[in-house]
Length: 160
Image (cartoon, rainbow, N blue to C red; front, side, top):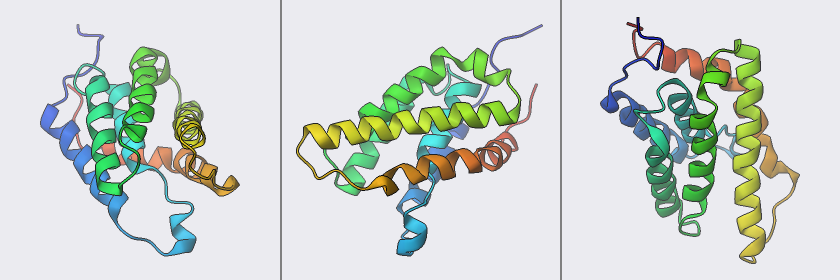
């Protein structure tokens, strides 16, 4: 019996991360852009929790760096924040995976708040203007959407 992480294809993990990155780049109206959930962070968080050996911290760093380059942000800002969140998810994957969906949503909320906190701290240290309280809304919308994202990503693979 294999009680470890399920075998997940690397193509599936990186393919869904690319799809989440592309969905992150889709322009939205101003009202919806304020509450846009961080789909890339949620996707990387899901795969780091479900199959930490397939994605690992590299997926967080690589896609965070890609997000920095595409959005024109300070180079390494999203890479550091996403790597940190991915590291926590990999370290706590057995604990988080064994919880019910509501508690997983709380875990996702904490991870998304930590992600935003790292971005906020880097903005402050680098002299960029600190945004309003609205910068924290995507973390809450992402946590509210976590059951949907986990359900959709869970349908992409079959348990063995």
